[in-house]
Amino acid sequence: MFQQITRTSKLLHVFLLTFLFSCGPQQTSSLHIRELSSDELVADFTTMMELIRSQYVFLDYKFTDPHELTALNEEYLEKIKSVNETSAFGLMKKYLKHFNDPHNELNFKLGSSSFASVYIPIGTRTIGEETFITSIDGRITESCLSQGDKIISIDQKTIPELLETYMLYETLGNPKSNLQLAQKVFHRLFYMTEIIPTSEHTVLELEKPDGTINNCTVKWIKELGFSERIARISLGLSELSALSNPLTPLSGAPMPFFITNSSIQEFNIKAAKPSKPSLEKFGLNSLFGSEVFAGISDYKGTRVLTLRIPHFREQNWPIRLKIYKAIIHEFSEKIDILVIDQTRNPGGSGKSVIDFYKLFAPSDFDTYGVRYRADRKWLKTLDEYSATDPQFGSPNGQMILQAIKGIEKAYDNRSIRTDLLPFDITTRSQKDKEISFDKPMIVLMDELSASSAELFALLMKRDQRAVLFGEQTAGAGGGVEFAGELPYSGAELYLSRTSFHLWNPDNQTLDIENIGVAPDVTYSLTRSDLRSGYTSYVRAYHDLAHKLHQKGTP
Image (cartoon, rainbow, N blue to C red):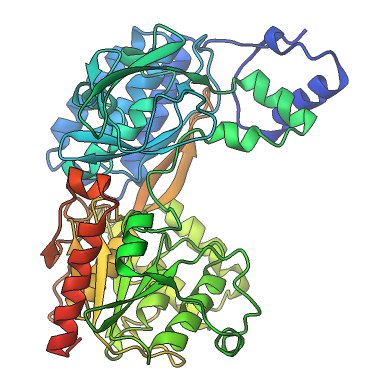
């Protein structure tokens, strides 16, 4: 029974399958996902092309010559007509990669491939063209792996060789950012036909910190197949979440990467926790479960507060903002320099960025603007937003009306994007009324600081409010939205639907997409940094903090 099914994202099928597994024998191997036909694969790819054509905000920016895009479409359409499902899924990912936009994603839910995706859960950092192990998950039982090991090869292929293949499918924005994709070569997805492992084990050739060369055999961990996932859901097994998220995240970690035993000891970094009165001032009872890092240090007489901002996501942002305010309120008179660490910050909400920047703005300030993709989908979405204010009388309603008029104007003019529109009803924003920090600041950033994290850095740079320290950011300047579902595979397509830019007093815009934000002081990590616990990195930004303190200006 139920030997073949076609793919769909409808929850009804999930509930039906769950019912079958929970009420009948647990025969997970009996479920077979029918492979899509050539016509169905072509229909999926055609739908994908049309969604990009009609909804992608950077279409003419990425392909200034429309004939080039037409040729690309025809090339991939012909390829998909002659391959099986697994290869077709891989071709769709490769096609999307041509737009060089880390916000664009195509997520496959099901597949008929007999090969399950596999992974080895370790964290890495690439420095230059050398990749080092930085963390090892407890699911790895082999003792031959150690933090600080340099990976020479995997099954006799070097990291650059494997990375060249992986980058056919994925991008992080710029060449230096893409080097950090080296960690993902330990996650072999079913459609990456060029690098599917041929054995249950892989052999890592490692250079130990003392220079010795060792081989380490590690077993690939198999991801759950579709039928296994359904069976485990029906049984309520709690480990499903961990098995569904195999890799250490590249970005968004709550702790700064440079906070190690070595850096804590050398710089005597102590936890900076707000007192109960400071918490209560902002309506908080405790810091329980907040995962907010703040550390204070005294370097050559300069008191430095380092505050970690791992992301700007909307989830729990009001609470996080109150905690940040409580910390700054508690320590503003006790420190000389505030350091904001937003390395490996993947971004989040632009509104969260503005909320946070208000704490440091020298005065009322010009915010950022957005350009919408001029299409009917945006008009429908904005019309739904306005349901609670059909007369557009509120400030939010006026903002929506302004966006609708801008989209209609661009749509009527057959423009891909609207003119620059304020993200709020006005292009100006006021300083925060509860916190006003006016001492010198440093912002730490790197090649994995992306999206709205870049917006924060650009605000700081434009208003000369902080010194930017580290590496050029990723250059991901779009706002991502769900674009649609492919009809047969059920794959979900996400695209950049808006682009964001800074308002400038001279009416010129500052852009981010494929450009990024350059640091004022460049610091490139070295092998020595990693193996010494990043003490040189911490010393470098503390030296900068000391100079700014002596100079005495923000």
